[in-house]
Image (cartoon, rainbow, N blue to C red):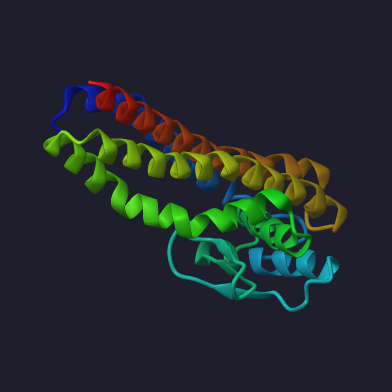
Length: 224
């Protein structure tokens, strides 16, 4: 596929936007990592305050290695924060930590888009692992049934990226609101912390663009 001019042509927009989204996220995080919140709370402390405020005392907050590897694991009800977030009192760290706490709150309140996305995870993982093999096999053996099966499987991946957008946006919206109401940051500081979350959201938009372009490539190639 990487030798196919059509694939290269359709992959370029997604790659370019992906590079921009990654650069924007990292540069914005590094910029506001230089400014500490007036509360002097670390990312871990900020997340703990939001969780406790919502009655989620059973959700653990743990450190995890990596840069911006922060995530919430609904299976173990654990919020894991990278070193740059867990130990830092910066506006960047607080923004990311509160965003992840937002996911824990979504889980506790049974936020429908999150539940739907979680249900799609096993199918998405299965589809991602097999779809390219099935499609290429269909191309070489000239079997439309295989190519159509790959298109159907990859449609699940696209659906997953679509559902991810409201999930991530809602988690950020909760974080922006609660970080002020809980006294973690001031209204002015919230604006800067929000910039980090807005930049990070671009990575999910990038994933959707790439998925849509890949699906379109599959459809166009199958018709040929």
